[in-house]
Length: 161
Image (cartoon, rainbow, N blue to C red):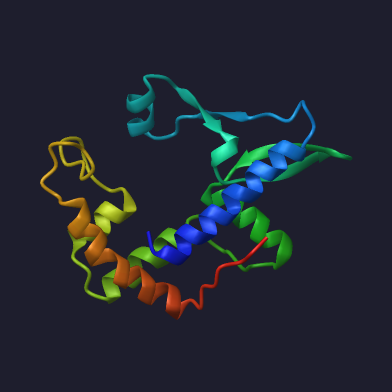
C-alpha cells in the first residue's frame, strides 16, 4: 500500500476511534454480514461473519429521523453514496475495480500481479499463504511505484479530518 494511502487509512481509523469514544453507548461495534463469496464462507465456516466497525470502512445510513445504522462499504453502497452527491458520477457498482484492472493492464503489469492485487486466485494458488512462491516484499516493491503513478494520475491527496 503506498504511503499516502496508508496515511489516509490511519487518519480515517483515528477519526473512527474518536467517533466511537464520543458516540452513544448503544452504538454498535459490529455489523453482521452475509458471506457472499465462497471463499468467505469457507474461511469463516459459516454463511455470515461479524465486521468490526472499530477498524473497518462503512457508511452511516439514516433509517428514520435521527436514527442511523452502519452499512458495509461495498461497490454498491459507494455507488449509492456518490449518487446522492452527484447524479451519474459512479455508474457501475464496482467501477473502481474495473478502473484499477484496466489501468494496470494498460501499464503492462503482469497478469499474475494484477490478479494478486485484485484477489483473483483459486484454491492452492493463494499468494499470501505460508507456502506461496510469491515473495511479498518483491511484490510490494514492484507494485508500489505503479500504484503511486496511478494515484498521481488521479491527483490523489490525503484528506485530513
